[in-house]
Amino acid sequence: MESEILKNEIFPAVLKRIKERKDSLVNIGKFEARGLEGWFKVEIVAALANTRHRVKDVRNKGVDLLLDSGIEIELKGQTNFVPREIYDGLKYGVPCLFLVSGRNENTIKKLKSYRDLEMLCYEIFSDGLNKWIVGLIKPRFRNSLSQNKRSRNYTR
Image (cartoon, rainbow, N blue to C red; front, side, top):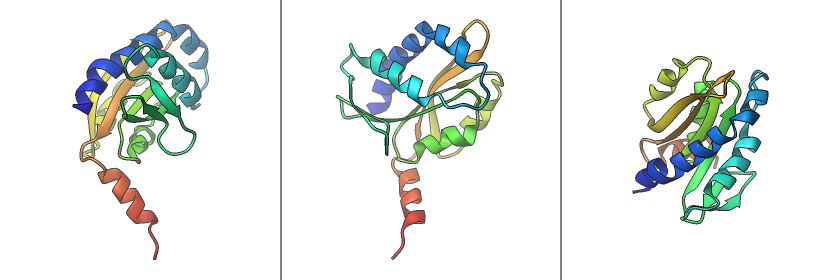
């Protein structure tokens, strides 16, 4: 059920907002290998403000967003596209929304090849100068990634 809400309600609202703000992306796109998470976070809060999934809490540590509906979402944003860094967005065992450069559209295939993730949806669009990808992934096996991370950090 959470996957359906993410795909059918949250993702479309976020995608619509990001496309409406592509004027900002034109200017950000000229910078190589820069993070976009702060900008992305602000736009997601605005995108969900008039939905039943409003942002309840914005966090700087741990999972980035908690929605009124109880859904937690991690965010990743980059002016480049490093699949491993987007994959690392699943470290808390929750879905991850991402916004990355779409200069190399084939890179999405690399991200989809990670066996521990499920690509719920993505869309490639242009701001007039640059291509971008907005996507949504989730762990294929609930909490498997977060449990692996905890076990690596565990000491007696």
